[in-house]
Image 1 (cartoon, helix red, strand yellow):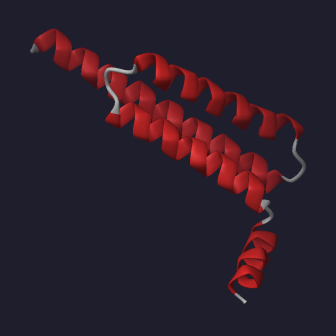
Image 2 (cartoon, rainbow, N blue to C red):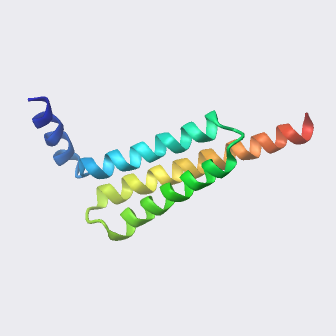
Length: 96
């Protein structure tokens, strides 16, 4: 019963469950690495690159406007967070 409700939800939104779960999982891993493992910059860069490639792939090659908007919004929010936090960290490192 619960699976049927979940399938119905994803059918109504126009985003396949697989695409939603992939983008969401990579988003969470990227944010976790960015905020949790400050010393592992290479891991963060690799996850960000994989996330960006997947979002761009979805935007370019998947059907449906909603899934493209979802991937684009997630990519834009990730890049915005990464940029603003990195800028703030650099500012703190310079002044303090």
